[in-house]
Length: 476
Image (cartoon, rainbow, N blue to C red; front, side, top):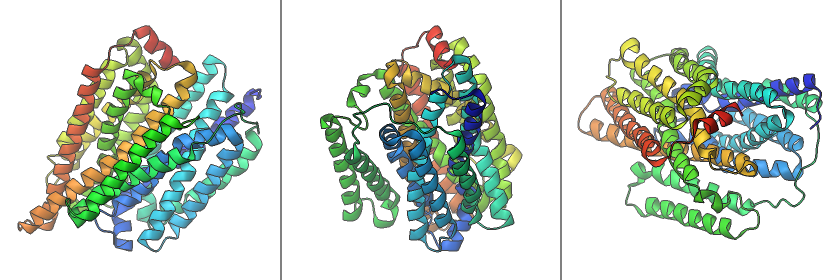
C-alpha cells in the first residue's frame, strides 16, 4: 500500500480513535451497571447480559469481520463496522427496556468486531517498514491497553454528571468524526485474495453455541441447574459447538482451520487465555458492583478506583513488557503475570463489608495491573511462536476470540456463583449487604483459581522459546 508518510500517520490517529471508542465500551458499562439495573429493573444475573451480549457477538464476528474485509475491501468494511457501531450506540442510549438494550448491545458488538478486526489489518498494511511498524503498533497497542482506564473514568464521569444513557450516546460524535475522517485518510483498495469464501455457517454456529451456553449458565440459579430448560439450553449449545467443529473440518475456507490446533503453543495459550479472561471480566464486573452496592461509592469514585490498575496495565504492556520478554523470554513473565493476577483476585476474595480503599481495594488493584500488563505481550508471543508467517493474523484473531469468549463464559459462571452464594446467605438470615459481600468473595475466589490454573498451565505446558525468537517477535 503506497501511502504518503503524513497520510499514514493521520490514518493511524483515526484508527486509534476508532479502537479507543470500541475498547472503552467493554469497560465504560461496568461503572454504570447499578444505574442501569435500577433504571430498567434488571436482576443480578440478567444484568450480566448487558456485558455478555456485546462480548459474545464481538467475539463471534471477529474472525468473520476479517474475512469480509478480504472479500469486499478493508476500507469499505471498516466504514460499515463504524456505521453499525455508531447507530447501535444511539439505540443503546435511547433504550427504555431490558430487551431493547440487550439487542442493541448485540448489534453494537457486531459493528465493533468488524471495525476492530479490520483496523489492525489496515495498520499492518499501512506500515511496511520495520521501524515504522514497531512505532505504529506501539501506539496502537497503547490505545488498546489504555482504553480500559479511559472507559472506567469516563463511565463514572458521565453516569455521575448526567445518567447512564450518555455512556452510549458519547459514541455518536466520535463515530461521526471517525467515519468522515476515514473517507479522506484511508485508501480504497480491493481484496488481495480473489477466491475467498465466507464461512457464514461457522460464524453462526459458534456464536449461537456460546450464547446458548452462557444463557444456560446465567439462568441456572433462577431455573435450577437440573431443570429441563437449563440442561436443554446447555445441551443445545454443546451440540451446536460439535456441529461447528464438523463444519470447520469440511468447508473449503473455514473460519478457524482446525489444523491450527495441532500446534501445542496455540492450544495451551488459548486455554490459558480463556481462563485468564474469565477472571479479568469478572474482576471488572464484580468489583464495580462491590464498590457501588456494598461500599456505596458514587460512579465517579468507582471510575477513579480503576485508574491506577489500568494505567499500570497500559504502561507495562507498551514500554516494559518487550524489555522483560527480551531478557527472560515470554514464558516466565507470562506465568508470573498470571500468578500476580491470581494473587490480586485472592486478595479481593477477602474484602469486608466495611472496606477501606487504601487497604482492601488498591493493593489487589495494583497486583492486577502489574500482572495483566506483564501478560498481554508474552501471551500473544507464545500463541504465535510456532505459527507460520502467513497464518500469524489468523492466530492473533483466534487468541482475541478466545479471550472474548472466555470472558463471556467466565463472567456468566462467576456471576452465577456470586448470586448463588448471596441467595444462600440471605436465606440463612445474613443482612443484605453482608450477603452480597459473601457472594462477591466466593466469585473472586473462583476467579483467582482460574488465573492460578492459567499460570500453572503456562509454567508446565509450554516449552521455553529461545530469547532471540521472543526478541524478534516482540520487536515485530
